[in-house]
Image (cartoon, rainbow, N blue to C red; front, side, top):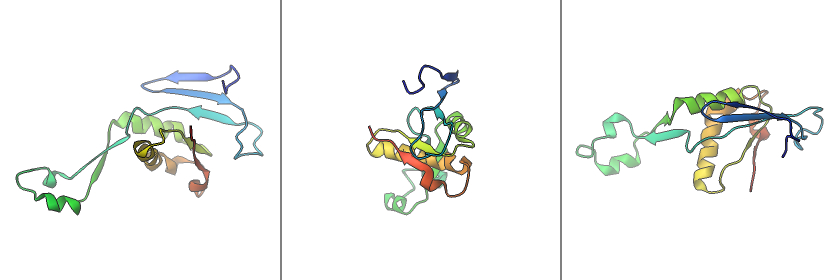
Length: 131
């Protein structure tokens, strides 16, 4: 595979694979490139209405069009896992299904991780893999 047969793995709830090289085309001047690969199992966040909008008997459904939404981690361990893997990286490549749900999960990952990337303006260092 990509690691040339030399990689390290750690396993918690989700595996982390780390290997050096091959080069990364977006960093042509880098002499060594460390790749860290992990995964998510579905969505990172659940979206719901605040408690005052939860009663179907007392809330007019038309109000829900203007109601705020609350994002809660599906499992806090996934957010923590992603943040630990992302801390200090220079680039992020997101490789999710190429459908609306996959794109939504990409933005969920960015929301919890992008602030942990090195350097200013990480937007120009986030890439989307297509398969």
